[in-house]
Amino acid sequence: KSQTAEAWEHFSNCVDQARSMEMHGLLGKFLMEWARALAEHGEGDDLNKAMELLQEARRVFEDLDAPNYIARVDAKLKELESAAP
Image (cartoon, rainbow, N blue to C red; front, side, top):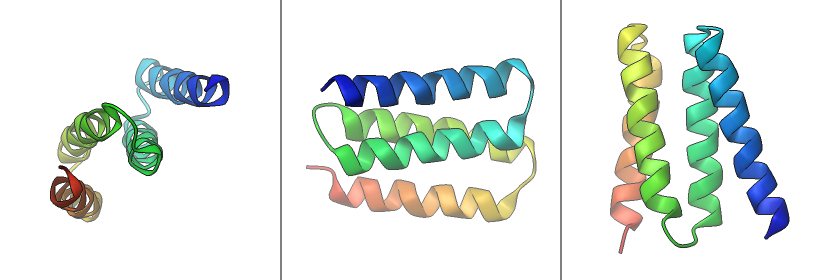
């Protein structure tokens, strides 16, 4: 459990740093990676949090006009929605 908490804190710190440094592409990628880790962990509200992160990543990539990344996010969202109970 402590390793999981440390991992989530690490992702949160990376996202915060990318956001504060206005590194939007990196921010979107960090959000996607955190969502992937949450989905793989799959406990409690992990899937809901993963979907929230992916939706935020989608907004970032929309602002960057990055259709390939938007498509990747959409595919992952669809995958998570179909896996949701």
